[in-house]
Image (cartoon, rainbow, N blue to C red; front, side, top):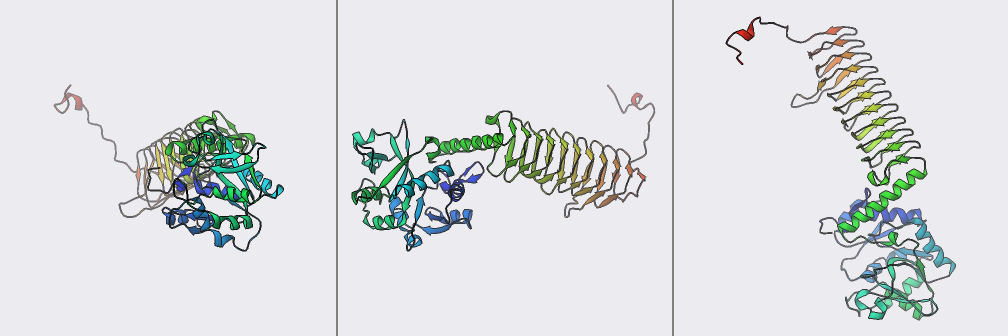
Length: 441
């Protein structure tokens, strides 16, 4: 990956690959999870702490050696154990369940997920006898030309009978091209001892793909995004062009919402029913209610109520709460503010650290001046107030109910209910100014 980040922590559709694998196996019914760490293991532990137990592989001596480190977690237990690579984020829980069920139904020592590939180069090949029974797995570097012509590959995803695995692991050796303990040699040992090893061919080879480069990471990300889009469309969400939206795993969207091209929904964003989102709208960890129209809006870490019209070119910053029936026009920024029902912020407005009541009207160019260079202060604007164009509200300041500010005012003192505040220089006209020497064409 050419990265300071461990490969399994690179994100696919919003979450680390390893976390994606953990989610899949848990949804398939696994009761507990153990992660075997190696390179920069402390970062891996930090990223998925609480989701899995850990063991460390201090020396990188192969996949068989890695699994040996987890033997203390398996001793004294019966049943089955899955072994899955942390860089296979496209696996589906349905496929994992099929792998487990096959192992159970055939009373097998192990089951192996395989795939048929047109170009199997680099993968271990699954070997079968004339009756189709699996006889072993050979790695790319150790295969004969005839064996390497086989198109059925080992995906690195297995289900083992725990006791059969514990008996076979000590019999591994490192007499191979890479001088490593191959976990795949376990299958040959089991077969030689007369145990059943059952291959399970994946219906879709795509889900078995591992990630070993940035380009493969991009492919995996696109697959998971497409799956998410398909999931939402099956639940009643309309997506104008599924290839032009970016919806992360933990996002939820209500029925009859329409997502337009350029929409990005990230984190734990929740979008309600009957909304129109986009084009070119990004919501990151946003709670968005019903019947909202957001056109070219960037919102993060905030809450949007229902029946709101926003955009284009709106920025909602963290801590903002927008209630219902609010109109936000073009080139408006709102930060850490609570905006009441029916309020209008039509255009060219900065509203920061403010508590704004219901049915307030902000004129074009209004600014809440909330920072004096050392501290930030709040502005309070009560219900039905009318803020004239190009008004500066210098916090801390309180605008009363149904109060007005005149256009162009800089308000530094509280304004009582139903008052008009004018804070600007008196107009002065200088007659014949153009004719004197002050101005020339």
